Length: 148
Image (cartoon, rainbow, N blue to C red; front, side):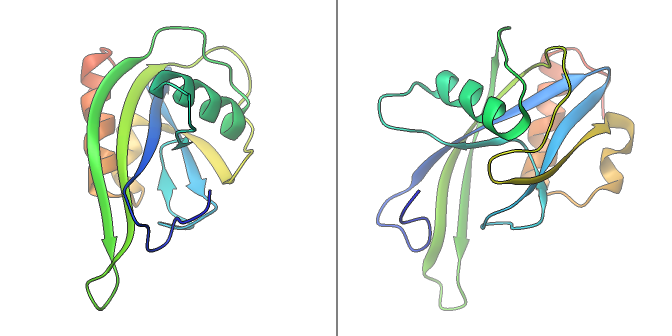
């Protein structure tokens, strides 16, 4: 994706909160922004692609899991990162969905440096962006997962 840093317009990103047995699938980001941090799997929407198509493609690319079940809309998050001078370095409009993980083994792929199934009960022990933590909590509530 070209023009990620100092873009001329916001980029659309789609993330997915995937649950399996009261755990959530998180990826360690392999690219900026938030390089090396834990986050939801997902990525940029491509021209001609619906946001749900983006969600399914990105999950497949980053985790090897093919979602054929329903996805539930969770929230839209504005992710704006400014540099020291106040200029917009990154600007993403993030559209987050939630779903239940299909059977199969998740394997890190794409620009995902690592992945892990994190039990919801231990989520507070992991350094996460506050907005990511809030989206996971809302998704857990929407899908009837054990509360955080």
